Image (cartoon, rainbow, N blue to C red):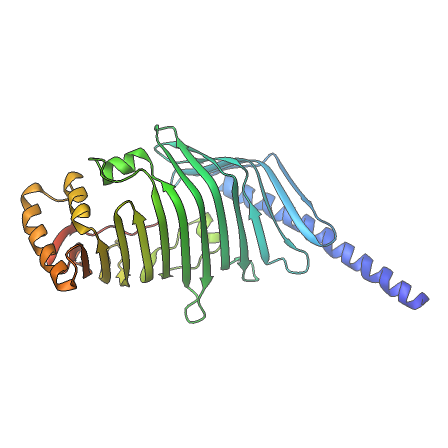
Amino acid sequence: MRKLAWLAALAAALWSGYWYAGARGIERGLALWLEARRAEGWQAEATGIGTTGFPFAFETTVTGIALADPETGLGWEAPEFRFGAPSHAPTRAHAVWPQTQRLLTPRERIDITAGEMRAALGLVPGPDLVLDTSEVTLSDVVLSSSAGWKAALASGSLATARTDADPLAYEIRFVARDVVPARFVLLALDPTGRLPGEIAEMDLDLRAGFDAPWDRHAVETRRPQPVRLDLHRLKLLWGAMQIEAAGSVTVDADGLPEGSITLRAVNWREMLGIAAGAGWIPAELVPGIEEGLSLLARLSGNPRTIDAPLSFRNGMVAIGPVPLGPAPVLKIR
């Protein structure tokens, strides 16, 4: 019994030493990271860094955070940020954002409030902290900009998982309900007010390949850029409109997609009217496009629905044989 007691005491002492060294290592490592960012010209401040949770977890709270990258002009401020992990599995991390925080861009300041904003992260062991898996949960999120706009989301989730076949690719699933876009977005998308101010459902399931790993360097230096998107499923329910899509595109160095996505659009005439009202399509082209889309709808078997490929080539996008205009640029700032 005495030997068992000594072994238990020794194990407790060793574990206490491990936990204390780990906690101090987290605090010191974060302080050094902030110092390195300041040396690169960033604003990188925190009024306090502390770790609790002994003996089963490392729970770190950072207070008074202010980060700003001079290269991109992006910044973030928050009264506190909490993250942690079980002490026996430090790469299975979690993070909790505060109910109020602020995002800074070169053009505006965006105040963010949330009922819940938390994430669970699986990181690859090593100094680079490569993201392996993640799951973000959102509820009652409101964005208020100094430019005068507001946007909101009732609930949402984002899950990612690095693929076994390609370490630079991730399976990504995003689901959101009751999304209220900013007024300037609504005016740009629907200036005639045909659609309700709330998107009922957004559902995105895709595999995205990037040109670099998502790790700590993605924050410190350059964001990885997409090189291929395999869209398993996209579903959007907005008023009378319903859009579903699936397909694959590659993305070149300029962010231009090349490939084809099969599109299913219900109430396509409503969409065409919205696009024409927003000025995306010149008025003189609308009759010809409508005639071409009518033919596609008849071929689909339902005059209200279009089933056709959305093609991206040479910087342009077309649906079936009908050209729509310039393709979107897919770049992460």
